[in-house]
Length: 430
Image: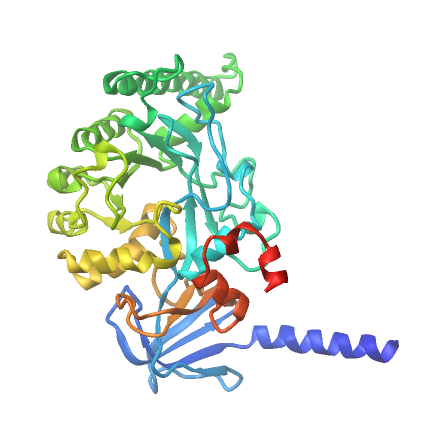
């Protein structure tokens, strides 16, 4: 028994030591995103971080490095999806059109197989949203798809789940939130008025709170979770992710952000091509979607796949997103490929899958490019990212392999239908 235990401990120690050693991916075509593409390149990672990137022969390989041959492969940063609904979560309900106190992180299943769909597509970071059926559906959550997560804390970027800010705020306008329900607006004008009214209340709450903090003789208002979240928005601590389609709704969203001084990312922006100059002039980034099967809501009928090109020409920051399950995370790269076909530059399309999205989530100091010091989140592909023939072969998060197409179970997540994601029984019966 003692011998078996000693052998087990020895094996575990060796495994841990191997993880501590640097790993060098050599002879790959590397797309750092923050610099020129590198032929015959090297990516060196250790302790979950990127150590070096460069041409083979110009990067010193440590003697204890594990060397992996990548000839014929392409390596790029892990993809950043700025708008997803994976994880089986939910947000606000019909009790109010505005639910700033609701946190999607309280409703997510961190073990959901739906996250496998993202990993199979090379996505390593997600902004998971509550739904868009409200003027304010609740707080989003930024998550890293780390290996073997059991709790939501295992996926978060924030350190304190209760006092920290773990994501942004989901807002919407247009037809989604217009209803006959008495708690909801019936027109676009009423929608904007309800938002303005709530933010005005939050300004007063903020004023009274700050007065009480600076003058101990005054009593602040009772704690209000709704107001707290809105104050965080107005103080620039929480980004607003704003679902909007029609050009007039886009400008309304920008107008609200200016009035109350909050940081905003426009989402979907079907008619961005109509107001691209105004979006750029406002300095507002846009996270857009590509739909290759037209249909759905009338306000999106003028959606064009050259939105990315129009925004790039205007000088606006642009990223792509999946809105999964509207589009499938496994083919996320296709959105940028369509963008290139419709006039985007290759460089901006690559950025729109990676660093642009990281900036929109304010995580670009850690994500979005193969830069020494950043997290070792990267994708190994069989070819060019914009080729329809290219497969994601491996996805790595913080130096750990989290998806491997060579593994039959992982391949099933990459190629199978939705039955794969509905029941783990599938893998016990096949």
